[in-house]
Image (cartoon, rainbow, N blue to C red; front, side, top):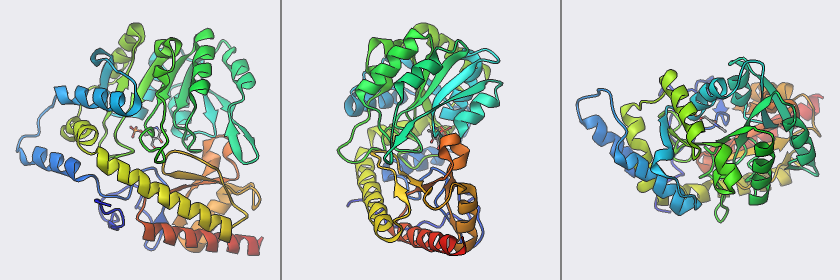
Length: 389
Ligand SMILES: Cc1ncc(COP(=O)(O)O)c(C=O)c1O
């Protein structure tokens, strides 16, 4: 490998949110990477910082070029320049769009278990959540389309948030599934916010399919939320794009972004996408391979040493989703026990909706030595939990 993903970075005293934990604890929780960013990105930042003026900044032509080229070449979706809007982040876009595209007391629908901030962005903005539980059978998830359609036919459901690929289960939705989602949402007049922030973190050889690219129906109702931040170790930079083919919808979201003043980049947010998408593709491909190897290592380790835990099969993200219900349904107690006993900090699935109870999530975007450390702590924690039960 050209890049060194084995290198351990000390993030403890760098104001890092995830590493604000007690001495000796190992956080494999919040979704950011413990890798150095790609050299081309660090160079672009250094050059920008070397310029001694840090005044208000603008979106430059290469920002557009970066998104358009990347999605065309990597993901086979031709984004037109006019469709693109800068936003300070995916969750800020989600929150402001919830307020602009729905009325109070209406409902936002999404598949659960789901990334917890989908709940926050809906409820904090005065809307209800309509959880559409994914069907879970034989340790794998699928969409129950009958139930989904029943939920969409509730006239109070006016917005859907689609996580593609899906956090926390790491599933890439197929073209057929996306076409069916689009068709049903269109039929029931439901707008789709497609959160595609994890799209570049697919396993080697696997491709995600942009929701808006699957049909005219999808393009017509889609607000695509895109970013380089998850995949390129840039989570704190606050940079994202919104791509909206439908003119009317685009105008609405553009107004929302400008009303909440999310439309202007900081100096690093402005340069990050070009440095990532135009100059760091080879780094990303190595990172994907490294993460995939970590996931394979973790799966084998757990199968052999902690057979009580089921690792849900996945093809994307650097997250693994553990079904711990053979051990307990109380994942919060399990999470707390493991943390106290071993210092390993995971994410308790019960914050991810009803279907998340009894599950834990582990982030695998770490140097291998830390993954090994995390897994042996996990084994120790589970064994001690079972002994005291
Ligand atoms: C599905 C999903 N969407 C959005 C975000 C956060 O996006 P941003 O930092 O751009 O607000 C995360 C972070 O974990 C995520 O997993």
